[in-house]
Image 1 (cartoon, rainbow, N blue to C red):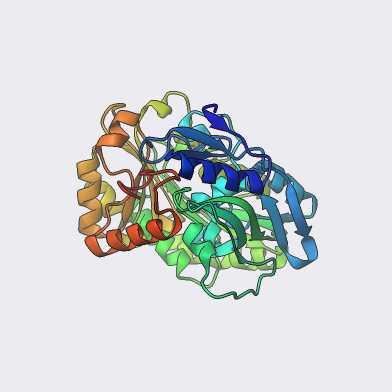
Image 2: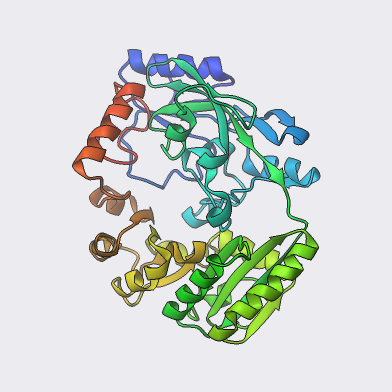
Length: 404
């Protein structure tokens, strides 16, 4: 038996898990391995490589539905959708470059397993909100199916929501179905330059509370603004995106600009520059450079209006920027061997939210909580769910929390 098993179809995935059960072996689930360094280091015996399960199995543009095998590259799916002027509306970001891997290598299965989303999360939701159906193999070596291939589908317990964000600890997905949507006709980005973090959070809150239907809102502090594409100046900039049909975007642009004038002079980015900017926000470009990859990186979610207060409680020398209107903060610590987990966890405990240590050496990820620690009741529930799907701990054991 080799160190890696690479099944060619769903039946071979089931056979691999059954073999692991019979030989009391633990399996590490990977697609192209772009998120292998995310989460707690797993103690596994065999790698179950799902990259051989690739290809779109159903695509009905008129029905806004696409099904693909779990190992299908996300870039391949997005290219297919682009030909039909459609998109994955949750705008999934990519962890590969952040973790030292080549870009455009992530798979649709990994995207769902990590419940990824990008700047449009504040309007369209995360991957789980677009996840319609799945075929998967549990840690019991049983093939299960949930959901279907239509947008309006109810089949009892929505297992898709459980598997999204489970990081392969519950089941090995072999085929997934997602909702797709038309691309917006055009987009524009409104800029406000020179705001401090508190002012920026207030401006983004005002925009998000308006009727202008903002699809993305971010604040890029001056120490990091030069890394983002499309900005006219490398200084602190608050950016807000509007998307849709041209007449609607034009009307909302004027309304939002008038609303935000109280915060400072307002400028505009055209469609080309806007797309370049939001792509660099989506891919967390400042922290994907070779030099930045040496530094521990946190992904912190909190209430948008108090995001600046949470940042004030964390290491002053850290670099950061705000996405999701302030609801998501990317924070890079100043030293490569120090994640400063204590200050991050204390800040989150004081102001609410949750934090994930996205990038750090394996030794550091083994010694601190990578995902937000769970209170006793929730931890017990997570353990029961794990035991229901994978009672012997065959699949990615300990990837998220000890024993899960």
